[in-house]
Image 1 (cartoon, rainbow, N blue to C red):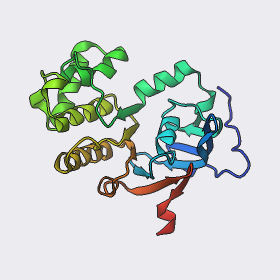
Image 2 (image 1 turned 30 degrees about the horizontal axis):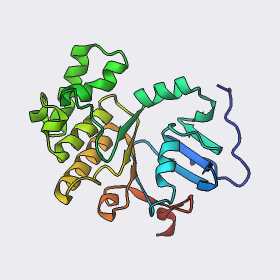
Image 3 (image 1 turned 120 degrees about the horizontal axis):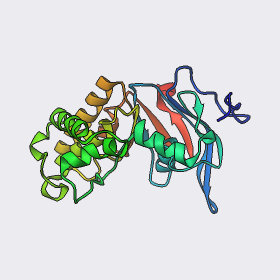
Image 4 (image 1 turned 90 degrees about the vertical axis):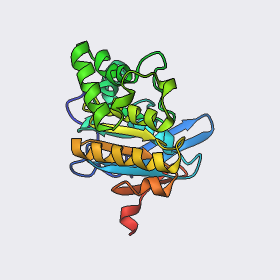
Length: 241
């Protein structure tokens, strides 16, 4: 890792002061398709930012770049002041296990494990002892109001319960940033709203930032501000109020 962060490319915005995670001038293409075309983004600790936009606008690509899952073709991306482009794949993988949490549209729980084991899994992968990991998992299931599914497998619980388990799994490591990609997309409105309440309340209480990708205004309403992605560029709506 270099001692000093490189200067952003000409024409890109510097990261706002105090940003936990920031991107400037991100560009990403897949063949002849441009997914991101100079996207800027920033988020502070404890902040919930909704990333909105039509299908194909680049919002999922932005999330994947921010999470270190996909490397952008150009631009700068920093986490706590460290350029992610300087990190090896191994270091990025370790960062995703310890500092980042993920909630997907369909949960992606391991079907062979109980709900408690699913929540404890990230801790176990990080070398935490079983008893300690299981105690933390139990505490988070209680906080997310699904302690009654502790010993059930994902196929034995409802969609809403499964998403709460997924939220618990994302937060159990003490993640600094949670990436939530359409977390209520497979739920009815009642379950979706409860999942969003629990996710945002728990994240804010823990000082965890949430990058929330959604196309639903009712979901975005739980955020502190909205960023609209269109044609691979970001527009922070707070600046246009």
